[in-house]
Image (cartoon, rainbow over all chains, first blue to last red; front, top):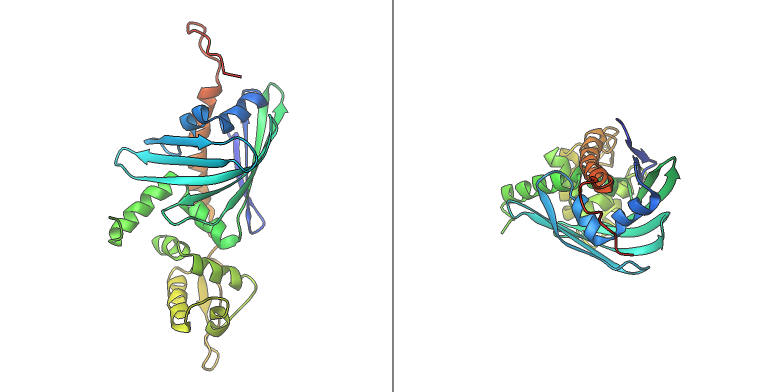
Length: 157
Length: 111
């Protein structure tokens, strides 16, 4: 059931679409309320989000921290730019690995689609090299690999 | 792939790649916007070249650099990995959004 599409657009954008069998309000809440976000935004199996903080107003801070069973971890910080219940979100985020990655500007739209919701997430990176770095990082899978590489480089403490 | 990851992990090297999207450049031209020496830039260029992200040609004493035609374009495998991470997320979200089974007490979302 190919409900997810993921495409690059130009040099700096990545566009993700996904349909959900729930109302725009439910999907919007799952993308904003920390108690819900921490239950699903985990990447590959084996990761948890022990810290999930989000100040849901323009300029409000976002902080998500992930851990796996081996004790490896990383975190994300960001800021909300716009929150329009239950149709549109704009935020900026960056990973800390531990050095911060360049800002990823993300606009997420939620549109009613029959009995469900069509979500469209448009990411804007500063340039093509940063976009490539983000895609290769691939969230937690890439993180795990990056920690292994750090160990191989003798940089991990 | 490891070489590429290492090459892209450094902000100066990403900036050099960005500069090269505007066209071919020499070491001196690349060093100009950065507060680092030409030898340091040359070191970065060696990393980028080894990763297959740039190519260099010989022009007398100059060795101008340009983006490799295959370098950053080869992001398909990374898209697949990113996609897999997103799929895992959204499968969990589907489960979260599914109506609670009728045998359970209905959960009420706080308003």
